Length: 411
Image (cartoon, rainbow, N blue to C red; front, side, top):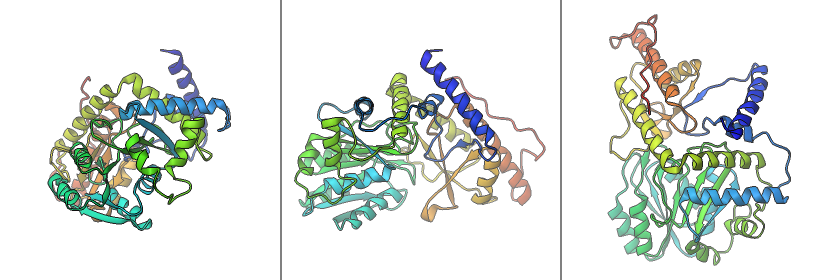
């Protein structure tokens, strides 16, 4: 065991002792799509000496963090990464409000809840919007997007989600990025729940502004978002009168490039945790992390199929971090949620029209195959008990029968 791992494990032991002393504190396996389970190393990074955010030591942290994040985005010398204290939505608003000229239009692609959120943000800022709404859980029609761009030269930018988390679909960023270059529009991509788990390359995919968050597939804690911006986008932003004060990306760029700091007091501890999480990712390598997510997704999805579940979509472009699962007729989501929580697992309801009809199960974060295995075993028990109680289906398990977990493969 190396020194860093040994130290972080020891610190985590102290932390767990404090948590266990507080009887109100409970430990759960988080299967919601962020915040996620974190490693001992990330948790230990939260325990540090107090630090001034204007001190050179913090500047060193920010400089290293920005450089390492750039490699996760697969950026080059044309890119700068700017950390923001806030949720992923702070980066969404910063990107939209900073990159869209006041006299131009933004084309917003919608196929779920987060596409609708971009519309809400743009409307707050009274932008001229071209909405391309494909309806929830439908694929994006690239040809239609090109028709919109070709017909309206006033469209200055296109905004879309890489992973539309509300429906679990990956959208065609590479194809849309190519169109944006063809029609000279900026391409803004929300990679909040895809960075670190899905194949994304800001250079290859022609992404001008790419935003993400610490508390999903990066495996850090909530509180820090970050935006990767290329020189093409900066040329546009420099001509735009600011719409925002706290979230003006030009302000973040000035502080980052001149001082390796942030313009306002950051969530210092969250920065330390993010730095530890990025180190874990890069030491593991991004390629191995992406492969691991594919394996976990297949293991989780096959487990659901074995239990007779249905999925919201089966297009083949579902994400590697999330399953959208139909609630069985013989149990409602509220009961399923509460019973699984009793066993130590947190599920997540879907949004809007999908609420209580489908639920989300994420395999993001420091989630082992054994944890997934045990979750599927407990879920099998809960379902069998519900089937027996409702008398709607015969059950292979009785309420008193021992739970038999699925076998975990060696990866």
